[in-house]
Length: 186
Image (cartoon, rainbow, N blue to C red):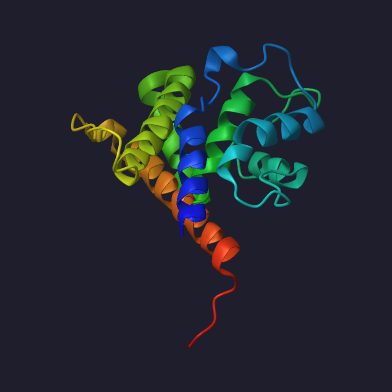
């Protein structure tokens, strides 16, 4: 059991230090599809416990364009708006429907602008992981849950908290399987 706990604590430390690139840190140059997929995979791979599972594929990106989740690329090139949307979509689609992701992006972009909405999402996702990890690490000081929740940010806060909870639950179960072995009904 100690191996599970040690590995989970190490992973938690990595996650709590992780920084999702903010709008200003996204590439200023336009990227082609393979570069987009590589960029997204590199920047959110830490959240996946399955190293061979693709987080995003070219067909997913094309579907997001068809569903009008992201704007059409210009001459097959993608910019900051595309990257920001794709990072948020790749994370949020794991806890809410694609339609809810689309509606949430539209709502937040209207309130905060695209840049502000994306940066808010990144900040809230990082806060959610830090909060849950502080609850797990009984030795550390617990980070208080942000009690200043307004209606405009409620969906972002709860969706990012749901993703953090889901990710940590999956990591814990994966470690249990790794160290204890397959689970069988007794």
